[in-house]
Image (cartoon, one colour):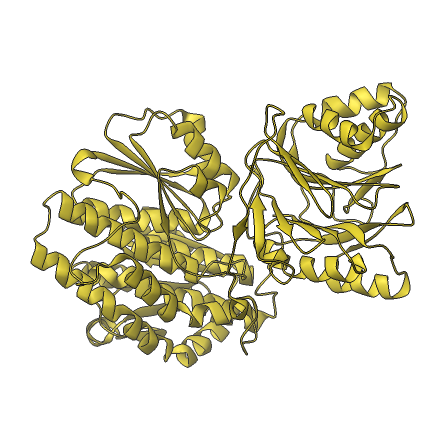
Length: 608
């Protein structure tokens, strides 16, 4: 969600802060600002909208200083405005914040009773005002005041404090939101994630839950939630710089769609054994003979990956599966029975609701596993088994390559479960893995149909409402297709299991409502054709996505058709994700919306 950067450097901080914030744009934001200390004086600049507005402001109203903090804000409390933008300053302290201070109302009342007034609608302002009060009224030094303030806060947050008169000090803390410290040569940096710091350093210390840090140019002191000195490791990270630029594409989303054959190939090679006939998991892995139930928890696109995997685990491995939206999971207090593997799926590994659900399962599930794109993330660090998806950095807010990599890893895990449980023979397993190894080639063939998808998308862009239909493993793909379209084109789209059409949604069908049917020629294809006929009988316009056999058998009378190569039905959700993504992408391009940074959305949702 919000992005945080901090610099204690040897050069002017403002341009460094702005460039670092640009690398966090993918997280989503509606305003931005920076604060610096120069000759002991604390000052700030803030602007609404894109970072270019802040850059323009700094050209006309520069900000000097080699120490500073910066922020991109995704509004929670208070509308996007200059007044509500971070950094928030109260006298001698400026603060940037990612998360939500849950007890801010009580703190505001306390401050108001002390005669302290407010100028913003934000929860973060209470942090700055409380710190100012401890410094000015109670005579506390900056570090002491920051620690006292932190002790008063409830909720989820990553915070960085900058102080007037202190050009070699940043105080930082995390509780529920990630924060990383970068080590340079006589310089130190702070970032919401390592991507922001990649051009500055490759040596990173990740703060653990409840940690606070006192940072100078030559030192880092970390204390844990109990106030004890904690030694956190310095890790050398490697971020492929080529994957954080557009690589000649118009948008990050287009580049990341095109990367999918490559990254899925990398994921497959990571998990298939050298001889190519078995699935190999990291570390000690998991013995599925001791697992009798699987609980899967995720949000958004990752949730749809779990819904797809439910079919695989149950049909291939015979393993009962429960799938939950993370934001609902722990509030219904589900019983976790013996023999349960709890599996959490998150691109960032920092999704707040998913992390909270994981913590609910601690001490209850036999094992906690994580399918994540960031092995150093909070969800990964708190899991017994980490299954990286190998997607590389994903910048576009609407997930594409992370989704298909999640599906690929979950399928291989389902095949491992089936093999362990004796649900499939060794020959059958080897056959599935051979089909998997061929999948990147099929995806390249599917991408060759992009011109037809773009043509269909230009017509979809004229619609106000669109329905997606799918059966079996294609039902979650229909849900994902509708989500992608909503996310970046802002067209209202809904998805249904095709058999549910006559149970209500068919009332929506008329000549103005396109219906996208995702139906490879599989055992359920004839039933999908029957549902298509029901749509066309009511003047509905069907866009059919299928293979050549499906097009020959069910393509009569359709409005538009997109033909994909034939594929093993088990793998069809991974392949059919491509047209779902490309239809959304080209529809958004036709409408002229912001593809990579759609309104109101954030890449990493680190608040509940």
